[in-house]
Image 1: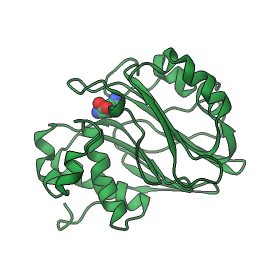
Image 2 (image 1 turned 60 degrees about the vertical axis):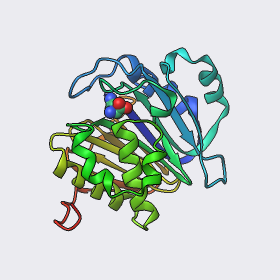
Image 3 (image 1 turned 180 degrees about the horizontal axis):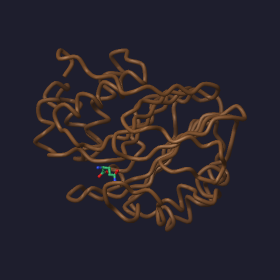
Image 4 (image 1 turned 90 degrees about the vertical axis):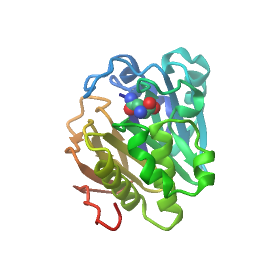
Length: 254
Ligand code: GLN
């Protein structure tokens, strides 16, 4: 089960954020500590997206190899500084392709998105929800995976005007209604704010020093980490964190 991380705050280099902490995302790729629902390592690929200083559109790097095997990324990460980052390491769900384009973050415009989990009954369980998307969105999915379709569903709501948290909450509720027992830890940022859901996977948040860091597992032993309870929606900016139960969808929306 993948692990993911998002950061908003003072400029930091990607090495400091992703590679150096004692339980960094790098370490979580080969020695994760809280893999609920199976999987042992996150070695099927990785990705990182960041906003160059002053930019509103992110740059993204993703590859279908273990993060520890990419020396180019290790060197690049030392040189890249950003105040908004979203990164993930992937353990592909059985049957899903292992390709660069199936790795998070998924990106469109100013958004970066990641999914940790799996949709039960895939793909049949998602036919009704998928049918409501524009055909072009289905023809241009990054990969034939549950995560790529979830991104298309979230993006459709964002482009219609939903805020980050509302889009994640609504899609999570809709998917749980049609595919119960799915694991849906979603994570998104637009470079200025972030939102995350917890549905049957771990997530922790640490706020302070003018920034906020969320990660599947705490990256160090700081007491400032707070676990996010299951079935909750977190929204945050560098100076605010809000955690509420995932709103249930209305019959009309589901
Ligand atoms: N189901 C998604 C994929 O295959 C996410 C996998 C995960 O969280 N382990 O990419």
